[in-house]
Image (cartoon, rainbow, N blue to C red; front, top):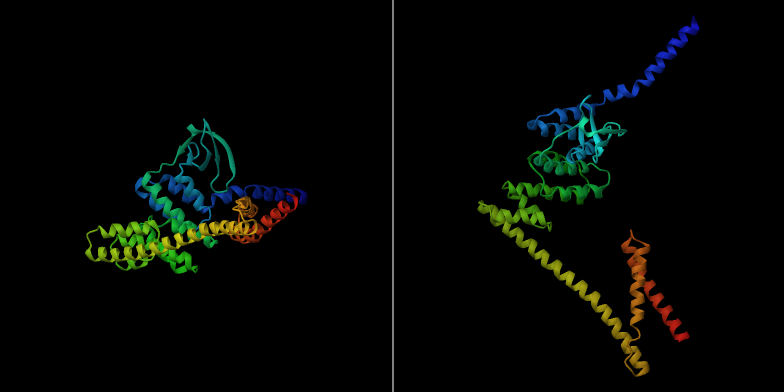
Length: 322
């Protein structure tokens, strides 16, 4: 009797363990979010998207990215939402959006694509960038905030403002402030013009230019002043760029002149034979950059002594052998 009871308990435990994944998937809150998006009428799609964003689910970005790329579908028979991995041919490869598990291939006739219009697709670009603002890497957050410039609408102002208050990195904060300011300038906010006054981003200049052509005289005047500040900054940058390239080109000409002076002083004739040594130094610089592709600054620093050493070694070999 005790053996029978033990076997019964063991069987119940085994069934419970085997049914865990299915029950866990049924209880997954992501399933309700995806079903809500799939079943939402056109007028409530934005609400369903906002629910996914507000959920804080780490899978939300993948879901919305698949939705924006027309890769979110439902199985006709079961109504299950799946992600289409490969939509070529008759049979499409699909995956479970909750677990990421590959589910094999299914005929495209058995799948019903979750429709999306161009307006929602355009909004998704800003929403996806908004999700990247929660990344751990500050560079990713800064790139995301920069990508949002010119794409902020009324629905993103509040979450962006909340993100700005939480953000500690100064560069990311500046980018978020500029993204919000571009939207607010379009709404006629005079204080937002001051934020964009020092920005060199093309979309910031475009927003100010549009404000200058607008119907608000006070905003147009202030935007014109901001554009003047930006133009002055651009002139200084162009002057610095010209100076840098001039020094760079001039240094090559100086090296050539020094070589000519040395050879003429020693031999009494003009000799252009030192050109190949300059070429060796240039190739050495290029070679150092190939050896250290991810560290351009270090490669440039090391290429200076390396170029001298290679050119000097080549000169010694030529002098001794020829």
